[in-house]
Length: 258
Image (tube, rainbow, N blue to C red):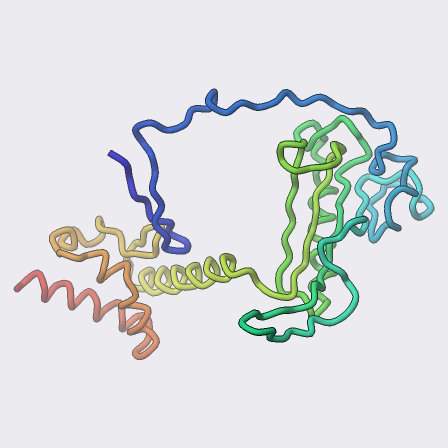
């Protein structure tokens, strides 16, 4: 029988085919063939083919935009967003519009054209992580930006136009809706977890009280509506989280007696 599974972070239900799922061999993957490093703008010696570097990580002294780097950060040559200007948010008819301001950078993972992250040394991977952190910290200083996303595609099938290993960073002037929903739900789970912990109760992944801590709860109808629903959250806003949990447990016990 198919299953409906609830995402504990955002509360969405999804359908899952558990009887006839796709197998790995059902997906036809084209074999990857290297094009070669000739003319690659990310290889050492071709620094002039990219915009001037924003930041670089190196073990040796070097001149800007020349070889000798471990990780190199440059503005995207074809940015999805522009760093200059203001948002100038406005309404046009039924639409809410903002100028496409933001940051769009490329983080060149290493000077090696034919190496992916699993083939790098620990210290070389450490440079990549340092670049992620450094660029994020720097862009957070810009008050226009509210959200930073770092992503990495490898190979043509993943959407990468260049085969030399690299990551991309995008900074936006707003938080995407799905990310904001996740943050709100995580905050709810954190609040319930903290309150339940004070009472010596365990919680599950959804922020609900674990059944094994109160075996009698298994006998209550509509348990999920009471324990995992919005009741505790709504009441906690009025009387505090700890008291709301106590009130909910008392309500459950009264229902058991009916």
